[in-house]
Amino acid sequence: MIYLSFIICDQSFLIRKGLAAVISKIPSTKILHSIDSEDEAYNILKNTHADFIILNPDIFYKQKIEDTLKNVCKTRTIGLISNPDKDISNFPFAEIIYYNDTQSTILKKINHLIEKKQSTLKKQKKQEEISSREASIVKYIALGYTNKEIADKLFISSHTVVTHRKNITRKLGIKTAPGLTIYAIINNIINIEDTKDVKF
Amino acid sequence: MIITKDNKMADVIHMNYSTLSVLNRFGIELGFGDKSVEDVCQKHEVDINFFLEIINTFINEDYFPKKHLQSFSIALINDYLKKTHDYYHQVKVPAIEQLMDQMAHNCYTQRNNINLLTNFFNDYKQELLNHTQREDKIVFPYTLSIEKAFNAPQIDKETVKLMEEYSIDIFESEHDNIEEKLFDLKNIIIKYLPQPKNFQLCNKLLDELFTLEKDLNDHARIEDKVLVPKIRAMEGVIRKKFSEK
Image 1: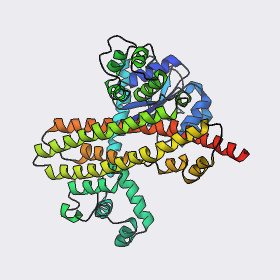
Image 2: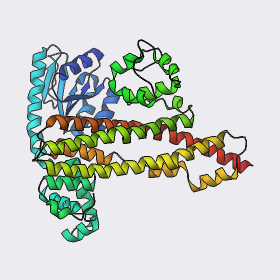
Image 3: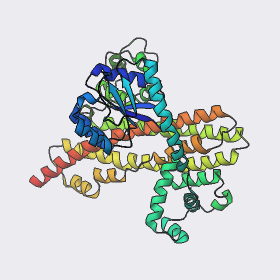
Image 4: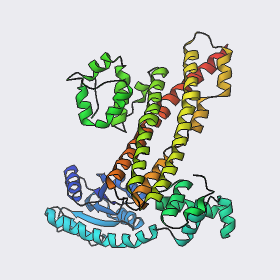
């Protein structure tokens, strides 16, 4: 299942909990971390990939956080601002949530970002179907060929076959060779008659 | 929620009805009125602490106070594990076979594909049988003799010889992952099999496969986290005692 993940950084426990409760109203969202200190934030932002970071710049020294955010450019950053008069022009925020925003305003802002993100995710999703190369490897696995035999047939190295198999397992969610045989028959990659000699 | 000896046995089932299969293995019969877990266990001569650890492990996957469990006798653990084996072969596997059979009879369009799944499951059944038989015939007797030698005042040569031929490390390295095929079967039905005509049967089948998988995982957890560490510790003590002699 695909979730959109969030990290929330703010000093106040109540604000973090409250914001998490609002976000949880959006389906398929998940709060990965809730952070209250600068040190923890550096550690987690460096090592964790979340789809969105919601962050109150008040807990950071400005110079360092910009560097950290540059390193996690995959993540969209949302500002969480207590004082609307604060100068935040230096921060690369994709969106800004104010402390006195209503629930519907916050949901609208986040939903807008999620829609953008999902349209890029859909493009990636197409790649989750197996490629024609992978389908031909499924065919040989289904027919009972070993990795070495498949490598010889397709003029590739055994190592490449192993990599393909890993990708096939990840994409299809099928781990065993007999399982792949059934997949191949259901999807007409091979005929059932071809498998007479294959042991399940 | 964690079950304690003072909870009512009836509430345990209300909370999570899949515990019924665990009660079954302990030989506990229904109709216990408002009796507490402790009273019911006493009536059926079940070790209350062992029961509590097993039932809590079953309900809550993260619950695992292995120190408690490790204080129980090997015979008690083996007996429980053996009963889960019987449950797989006498209850779960026949139920799944029956459902697949019904599905094949009820659906003309998918009959060939369902027959494929049946063959696949037959193969899995054999794998599961080999797995449990190896445990019943080799592993459990071995663990019992280790426990016996551990408690004996003197270490005899036979035990040491036995340990040279087999050890719990061998069991652990051979302890293959029997959930893989089950995982594939579930995914094929969920993702790839065109919906058979009778989807009620299909749902029932998936339900059986999911509960079997969960039960196998609980079973493997008890083996890996309780039986193996306990036997390994005993083997260590026996070796040390013998070398000092």
